[in-house]
Length: 515
Ligand code: ADP
Image 1 (cartoon, rainbow, N blue to C red):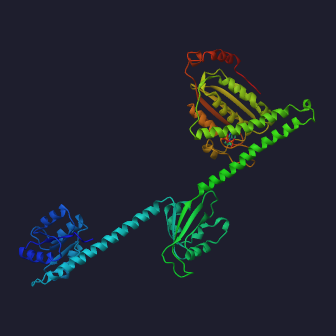
Image 2 (image 1 turned 45 degrees about the vertical axis):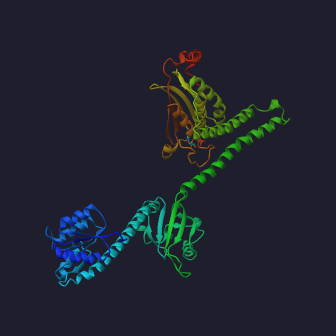
Image 3 (image 1 turned 90 degrees about the horizontal axis):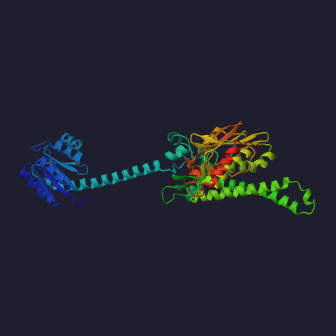
């Protein structure tokens, strides 16, 4: 874009300046004249798009110094020198100082005829330099984006070797970029189960254009290293068939999606199994109960217990799902009231007693005189059901589960201790995550929601839940709940006074031991 470019003519000799000014006016451009270096710099500082024409001998500075200043302060302003000495060395010197072109001054003034042409060439060159700089910036920005993007990017040469790989992909392939470049793409990824040869895929890209599909990182088991890949050949129109082409591959990491799908599939089969087993028990026994043979009085009482427990297993599953959907929808509300924790634990232990007995697990409750607790009793029942249910579920026959409650530093600690199979140390940091289950050789029923729900409920009460576990020895889950302020149970707020008597009764009954 050279329209609007003005000419700045820097010449101290008035006659020279006039002659040059006349010649330059023929270009149709505005010509501004300056008689010194300082004046010229002043014009440039005021702004505008200029091409500078200057002589090297100026009254206040060496023309080369002016060139250096222009190049430094106005790098987009080209300068053409008019030198009186027909000496290449002077011209080279000036070019090194930042001049774009030079014209040798002739005594007969014939150099002025060439000056407009030289300026036009200089401005054309400036356009080319601008274009080149724009391209360079674009390439740099693209390279930066490619390097920084979280998607993987490779450029493949026509032989299928990696010519470029971005940081994200190099990280995912766990190799530095430098060791990937130059090797075949097939060294790093392959089609799932090796269904197709990567060479065929690349040949198809060369011939048929774009290819999209799944590739997997070699040596890494799914869900890691699963990629949704698009390979696109570069250059159009396509060369002759059979001709290999450079291609760009965009790799989108599908590991998380793959893991989620796997989780959903596992989860579905898990819950259908976990509901089907107790349902079969219920249906089997109710069929037996509705059958006239054997007579009802000969049916063992254990049958009813099994029906109840199976119903409760399904109920527990459904409750966990309902809790989860409430938590996820932000609809979990608390209805805190003073209540008797010891009594609630007593009921829970009694309730789970038959399950523990049938499993051959001893179950004990130890509580001391507890301070008043203001909490949502039904929500805490869900916590106790999950933790106590787990303790029994993950403890083998002959083991022991102890529930205890005691004061601890101004809080109430409810502890569920078992002598079960324990939890591996590397699982501990993730234990309370949604759907988290420890992988075991033999699957125990469960959905991986109980601990997540328990933690959410306890934390909503301003409490804390902790776990200690030693594989092969057992686990201890501790729920710490804030004790109510003193006096809360003494009837100074609606309805609470009635509980004082109960609290006393409970105090007389503690400690309770149940085996
Ligand atoms: P679920 O029991 O339904 O799988 P939870 O969220 O209650 O889900 O528990 C998550 C995982 O923590 C369980 O799958 C189990 O591996 C482990 N776990 C929980 N409680 C215990 C325990 N008392 N002993 C051993 N492992 C446990």
